[in-house]
Length: 168
Image (cartoon, rainbow, N blue to C red; front, side, top):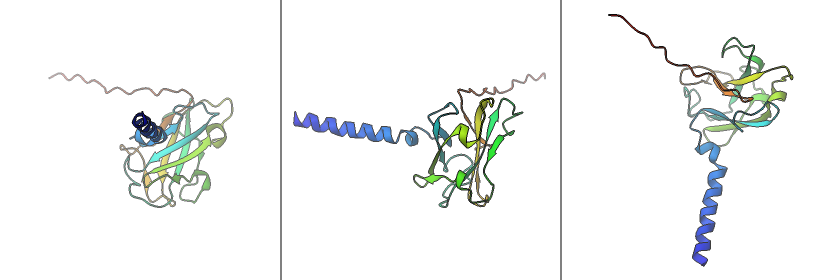
């Protein structure tokens, strides 16, 4: 009976550790929010994995900052950021991240407050670019695009590959 209790405690401990590190173990992606796809009035935690994307900050050991904006219903495309936050190339404490280890960084904020959104602003995605303090090292996606993270229940359209028919 004592052996069963000991095994149960060990399994419980392992399970709790896995739950604690779930955001890091389950996301091989570059950037994510916890909770996922949140409403704009909630506190979120933004995570960034510097070993992913174009790897512009892989192995970098200094402070990491993000430059960010909001894609709204008024944005023309994914590059048309609204409500931009961050002073590029400056030590801006508003966008400085905290290192959790040598590749995972985090910060927390309330989306609506951080971007100064009003009730009439329809936020769909948050856009991010990550950098070192002076902006000489930059991390974007593998395709060298801005990172986009859905919010407010928004579901991005999936781009289908164009089907071309060639006559020979």
